[in-house]
Each structure stands twice: as structure tokens, then as C-alpha cells.
Length: 304
Image (tube, rainbow, N blue to C red):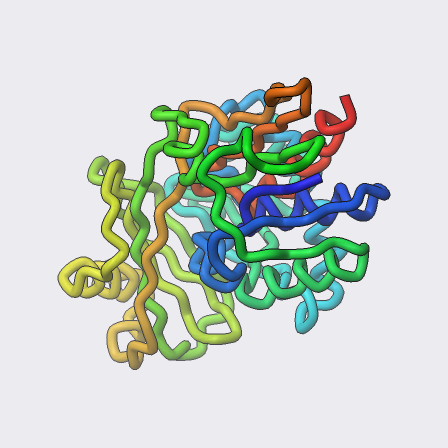
């Protein structure tokens, strides 16, 4: 069995398959540390992902796993952190929200408070790779141009934005996100605000390597080069919430392309010769949030 794609969705799917007794290889175009997943801010939250009727269960399945992994944050990269989503009310959320421990309205009613998983992605991706290896799996750097040419009885397609050309699936589109990493001036909680019509927002996540500031959500933009003007605007929006951010030393810039789709594609298909193909892509800005739920469903499809 070969899983194509070495981001958080691909690695998590491979772990579930390998720990279920399957012999698994992951083919990834780039090292896991350089995938789109590696630059994610990575707060657990169903963000820019559909369909809503399925996302809740996938997300809650993943939440249970992350709560367990948070007992070993140095090893797994997962911590449980308090914070506020401004501009959201509990009534705006789906049924899944009632099952999130400690999620409640803020005192002024302008947002929700919650204690949620915050994932240090560079650490977490390496941990996933090591967990896969411990289960007998292998990660190989390979470029795939044709899913039908992958030499396996079961192929699991977790290529994210790459599915646009590989499947091909024109419904997969990039939504460009830009982040700024600054020296943390002592902030210990996360914060997000809802997007404005332009797709820009203010959010910050305290990670071990610095405070991650965001962000942007620009559809159909492909550039991976940080825009200095956008970076300045991100810092200014975050500093309007926490003024101490304004003087924080900038440590770096990140850009990632979220693989959005009208709905996640998680389904069974076939390849020439009657071989099994499982699609698991199109998770938008919530790949981390639903990774374990989608992985378990994909593993079930691989056995049908």
C-alpha cells in the first residue's frame, strides 16, 4: 500500500493504516518538514472546510487524539492552550461545539472561549514520521505524475493542492495564507477574529519557537514569497489587539497554500487492473483539525 502525500493528512493516514497491520509506504514530493502542513499555525478548529455535516465528527475524533497527545507536548508538539475566538457565538457553531470541553461564550457575548489543541507542526510532523516508522512504515521522497502508475494494490491519495493537477481535480484551489513569526513578548493564550470580506484577519498563536501572527486568506493566489506590505499589516492588526506585539522582534515569515475544495474528497475509487484508490484531500485550512477522523475513515475505505 502506498500513501501519496507527506503532509499531516498523509502521515496520519499512513500511521492509522500501519498500526492497523498494513504494510505502508509514503511517497512525498518534499521532506515532511517542507510540506504545506509545516507552516500551519495549527490551532484545532474547523476552519474553511466542508461539508459541515461530516466535519464535526472528523474534528471531534481528532480532538480526542490530540487531548491524549498533549500529555507529551515536548515529544508530540501538541499542547492544550486557552484562547478566544472573537466574533463567534456558540449559536453560530454546529452541533460538534456542544461536545468541546470548556467551550463557552465570553462574558461580553462577543466571542467564545475554549481550551483547544495547539500544534507545533515541525515537531508534530517529525513525531508522526517516527511513529509511522515504529509501526513498520517507510517514508520515501518520490514525485508522482500519474496515480495509475503507482505500483501498489491500494493507493491513498493525500496530495492536497497537488490533486489539482494529479487527479486532475480543478475544484481544488489554493487559498494563500501568510504568517509572521515574532519573538513572544509574554503572550500565553491564542486569539482569533473572524475574517473580514477581504479574507484578512488577526490571530496569534504562542508556539515554542515564537509567537505566530496572522493572517490572510487570499483565494487563487499561488505565490509562496512573503509580501512585506502584508507582513506589516498582519503585525499592525495583531498589535491592535495586544499592543506589546508592535515592538516584538521579527524572527521570520511563512507562506502556505491551503488546499480548499467545495467539500473534502474522501471516497473509494478504482485504478486500472481493479486496484483500489482512496482519495483523502481538500481539507482547506483544517487538515490538522480533521486529520485523525479522516485517516480512520480512509483506512476503512482502503479495506473495501
